[in-house]
Image 1 (cartoon, rainbow, N blue to C red):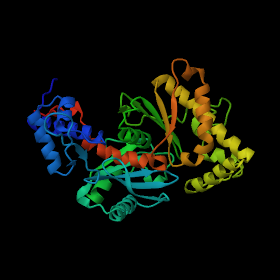
Image 2: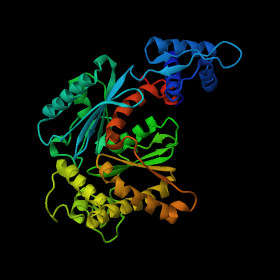
Image 3: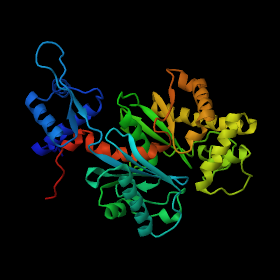
Image 4: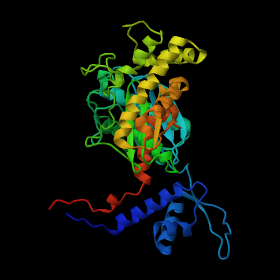
Length: 409
């Protein structure tokens, strides 16, 4: 069925289109330049710009003479006009951030994940943390566009429900987090898989559009990969794309719960690194919230020259490279970005090993090389990405939004 549009939808689309172009022009952009890039008439563009200024999204700069004619007034995004909250649930650490309209962090907290409690207690705890952070960051409720939550899968992103993410405590299983957090805070809430959120965050801050075809590798208590093609995050049919933990990278390696040996998830798991690096004894349980402290110790020893620690971390980097090569064989990406709450600790040693192994692979070097970069979002990658989900929904123009929704009858 073909569906048309209407004037309100067109007006909203035009405003969002112009706002996105202004956001991507940090030095400012004039109305004339906006009209040239959008194809909108001068009158339409003037009306849109006037509305954006009146609503506080955009500021007018000092007029600039650029040849004959009237000086051009640059329009710039006001990053402080609105904000968004991002929550990342990782078994090793919970991260909550407030970001401005550029995706820059203006407030953040890290804390140990909650291990137990009723759904109402879990949600009330998160809501209290959000309120406290907004107050600390000096942001009013009226300025908040919404909350984004990044969580390990499997989950139902459309309904905002966590199913049984294997790395989160049982208290989180089956939790209708999107609905409950919305009810507790009064703020629109979006739930997304962590690796998809991390990908959105990288794309949002990529104003130069260098990551249009890219892979974002996330390393925390688990490992996953966010994928983008032509600047669009790949979510998959159910929103659970990016589960790469069962790619075999070490044939004959440690057994995995799936029945295979040498899966990426077990080959580079924090627990294995700690054993291989001599930090913990084989079979000794390590609580997820303690992983960071132990990995920090391992990373420090690797950097200081401890041979066993360094070998363990470099081996993990090489194993991750094998997975990256397999993923890239399918995607044909330009860039691999690596981040996550635990990667920043290992990056000084594992990063070069990863880059060397990817560069040495004949599979990636045959046509063209692939760049390996560290995430600019560091440990906050998924949390910032979760907040950017909210910004993206409010500030990115999508042609599909022009279509009138199907109305029964």
